[in-house]
Length: 194
Image: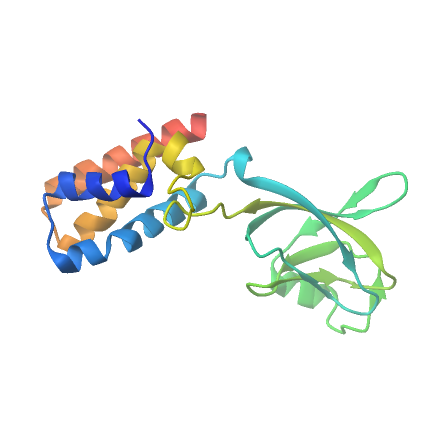
């Protein structure tokens, strides 16, 4: 059974037997938190994209797409092949090229902040780059028709993840919280096997 935003909110209230106004006002937050847990614990091929962009000479930053969640690969596109960069922690990049004016063909990249990747060394020319990344799909809470990939294909994950969040909010009984969490973990495993 697939969930829509409306049917998922109803199911959460039915499972928890809670229609109190403060609780109901938090239903969207419970669902968003569950979606976030699923996306960060289960990297699915369905949530990967490829984009091309440009690295600019003497600028070490590359802007991330707005729906970026995490990198899969980054490469410099040449006429005959792609040269893949290695993903490294920012401290490695700063040790590798402590002086940002050190230039060359980028060999490494890493996360700088929520909006940018950083390249090392700083590009010595303009390069076409290809980024393969995990993206954040549209939430069931923001969809025009109230549906989402998770609501249609990972309905148990979304339900039990939302129930864990809801029951945490309610400060519910430990045994029921454990049951919901175990079912969430079990459904995550099914999703990973998908």
